Image 1 (tube, rainbow, N blue to C red):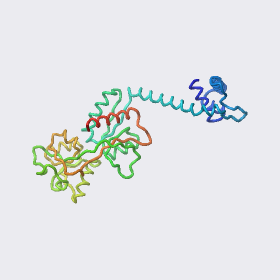
Image 2 (image 1 turned 90 degrees about the horizontal axis):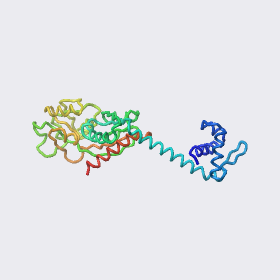
Image 3 (image 1 turned 90 degrees about the vertical axis):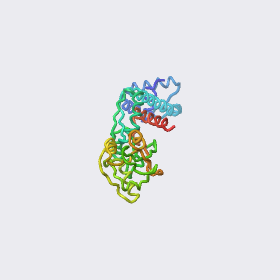
Image 4 (image 1 turned 120 degrees about the horizontal axis):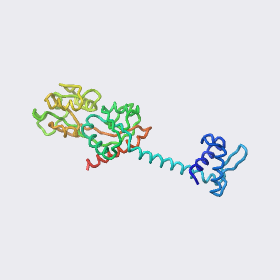
Length: 297
């Protein structure tokens, strides 16, 4: 019994016509008929009732059809999986991430991934979650690290929560502390100069929303920077900034946590629901989850 014979049989069973089946398979009709006859001899049973203009499955054919379809489907799956493994020797992954994660989580994850799959090209696109969600929807990214929840009207994405990260205040280590206490309230930012990220940063939106919830608008001394620039402005004594804890730990700046758990963000990995990511991207997602599992032990 050959896969080709099962493919011919399943096609004839679907269209109920030898000539149309041969056309669909791009083979000569006599060749198709010969292969079906050979399959019947192999099995010792006729698979079709052959009458002029009327092809029907016999009982043996009815028994074989679901098995043939399953074998063909398993064969296709095996072929696809082997090809996916082979493609891990080369290819690319397009990952989107906010700058704050590019400065903290992403480098360690990519180092591990590159060690396992050195033939895969890694393309990293920095941006705010709204921009990254749009690029995912447009097919410009395979995976993205985004801040959830997504806004109203966001495209259909498959998201997996990765971590919940505290936001903290960073200030110049040689300047005055932002509060006399070990932790500060959001309301204490009212009278303090701040360095603020450019529009489109999730950290900007979170910080401004928290201040407005306390009844005031924050005061910015410098506005519009990227992550490295903001940390540099803080280091120069131009103001405070609200940043993720992972970034603050590597910054060399004074770190002051907030009271309670209001100032947090949830990070998730996302991909489009309608199009599963390629194998190389799925492996990157797995490395990411493994890395966080180790970090959170």
